[in-house]
Image (cartoon, rainbow, N blue to C red; front, side, top):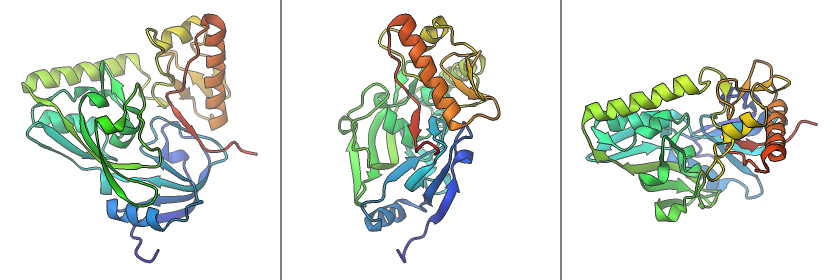
Length: 294
C-alpha cells in the first residue's frame, strides 16, 4: 500500500485505548488520516484479514488475548470535527457525543442535549443507537456516511440504518465516518438548562470518575437493569479486581488491577444471579471483543 498515509502499528496494546484500561494487543492497529485513506486501506487489505473498529473505548471490553487481524481506530484529528448550520449539526465519527451537544447548544439548536450524557463517539452512537434521558440517536439522525469492507463509500438515510433499541441493522463491516443530525432552534437558556440536568444526573448517579464502561446491560422491556441487579444481591460484588459499582449497579468498575477476564466474568456472574432471582435474562450493552488468553 504505497499510498497509505495513516499510521500502522504491529502488536499494539489496546488497554490504554479503553476506559476499563484492560485487554491484550491488536495484531495490527491502523489509524487513518481521513476517509480517503481509510477507503484506500480497506480496498487493498486482504479479504481474509478480520477488521475490528474501536472508538474512544468507553463501551468496550477487550479480552486479554487481544485481537487478531486489524483494529481500526478513527482519530479525533481526522474524524473529530463538528459544525452547525441552521438546525443541522454535522460531525465526524470520532467526535465525542458531548461535543455534538455542545456544538448544537452554541448554535441554539435544541433536541441534541441527550448526547451530552453519553460517554462515547458519534461512530459508536450510530452503531448502537446510543441514547440517554429519554432520547436516542434515531430521533435526530438525518444520514450517516461510512466505508464498507471493499473500500466503497456509502451514505445511509435514517430509515436505512434500521435502528432498534441499542442497535442498528446496518452491515457490521461498514465503518462510519460522519453523520448529520437535525435538531430545532430553541432558546439558549433552555438548552443549557437541559444540558445541566443531564450532567447533574451523571455526576450524582453514575461512577463517572472510575475506570468503567458505562451501562453494562440493556434495560429489559418495562424493567430497569440496575434494579434487577440490586435485587439479586449484586451491588458491590467482586471478581478479582472488578466490582459492581456501589453507586450504580449497572456499572462495572476496574478497581485498579482487573483483567478483561475479571470484568467479563463478573458480568456473566451478575447475569446468572439475575436470571436465577427474577427469571429475566440480561443482555450485554457493552461490546466484548478479542480472544481469551491461553
